[in-house]
Length: 613
Image (cartoon, rainbow, N blue to C red):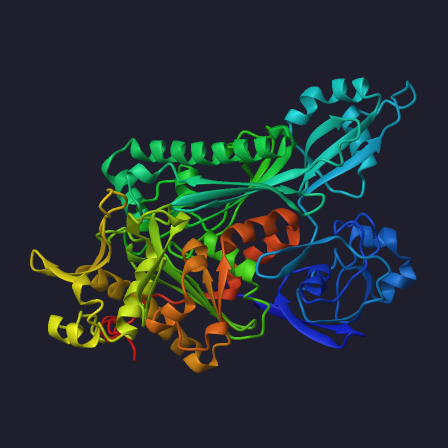
């Protein structure tokens, strides 16, 4: 946690709304985050000078742009440009009625984001040099962009003179943040793109975003090519410890994955990769460090230390992505070794720091990340769930692909299965695993300890299902599907050991969120919403999750599939520079709770193994 005040209070008039926001956030961003409209056509870049507000109580120094926008009398009366006014102390702000409406896009979990990308394209027409006007070419450009304080990317100078003269002095300046990265001939302001990456341990997704409209243009996904080095981050960290060449190989595979995704989305959209000026990447700490070639060994051994929690000054080429040669890269910061940038992106997309409801965010995977918050207070932890939910440790387990049983129900008419792509079943994916165990327990065919009932008890209670319980090599199995006589499909079963694997995983997670509730000082019944994040959360039955004790016992309608919120957070970072500042502020907002420090963790874990009644 930072030593300074994490939040300041802003009171907006005449709306009569008081909010708390991270210290240092601009008044413009604070207003928009909280639904208070501020006039602007440039999206908060300081160029339109329309976001005029009056600081009625408190003090904000006048910026250089404020001095251009207001008279000395107005400055003395507290008038400032909202986008230039950083709130480092509590303020009362008068906001005039808005006369224009900025462009916005809906992303994340119902979040409306004002379009304010770091990428700007500005059309400028310059005066030709003369003997009486011998300004340098770059000075001529900077003078035309005098409302921006820019640094020059050195490669811009290599072709600047030729580009200006061939374009007859009408060009488009491409700015990312505060850096001038390109000068393009003519008017190219209508074409500006970015790519949002979700680099998962198993799957990677890339989304091409139109930065002028906020719309997604193309999406592609593929398996992370690092898979041969193991299904989880610990396996990949171990590989780098055992083989000196593994780190370079893992970096190259991450680059190849991202490069292929970028090629795919550009091909789908029919655009040149040179028109993509920025990428944003959300990934866990291990994936990010491997992609950047940073040794991940310290992440795998106590006390689990990051090389860095944030990354500045990156180019897209540092991630192996071949787009515009000077395109920038934004990689989401990490709270800790096991609460990484993918979770920060997800918390941002879910608006966990702004929603006043008590909400529980759970990203279920080999490492399960949990965040609890009410808009004022945020706490996070990580629980070692293991690979059961990804079906990696399950005898008939498989990823969610054609042929995987994804839904299991047991009713009066017997067993019913739903298989991905409606083909013959060949395995059981994570959501089907949870369903199968929840249904067996609900139907009374499995006791609270997770044991299948004795054969005679099953025959008496459900004779129609008795033949599905078999014993092989001293282990009892529940057969979900048999290979038919034509040879289609395979026998798919649930073993007693599979049940134990799921119990260990769900016990780790439920122990995690229950301890987090205690640290927060609240109770399970007070939770108003549970967000299940990630691809697994998208398909998991809320009823089954409650049934096995994976999530709090609250009304099913309060449990929401949030989908790929990490990817949504990456989109938000591309579309709004202020949102990425919000992501960085989360590092100071979220208090991390280390479960391994709890002396009672093991006892609590054992208590959570049983299925609830």
